[in-house]
Amino acid sequence: MQSVEIYTAPFCGFCVAAKRLLKKKGVKISETDVMMHPSKRQEMMARAHGGQSVPQIFIGDLHVGGCDELYALDRAGKLDALLEG
Image (cartoon, rainbow, N blue to C red):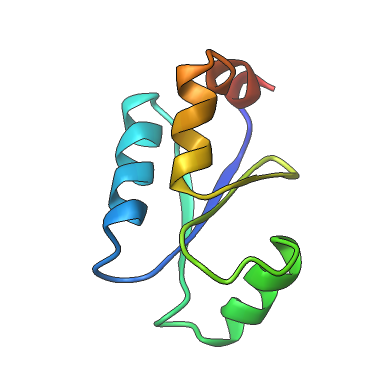
């Protein structure tokens, strides 16, 4: 299974939804709260090619995008294959 990293913020409904889907898939998530660790926001933006909103999701080295993109991958039947590597 690929590693999954997600940058989040408190009270973010999209973050909660993305984590819920990943947990439903049995994925162990490495989560970074950019509000608790402001220096990580710059890291997130660099990795996400300028993406400033949360969540920003990475499966392995692949930047997936946010919650909408994650769910779109799942609806298209592509998320499981990405998670498996």
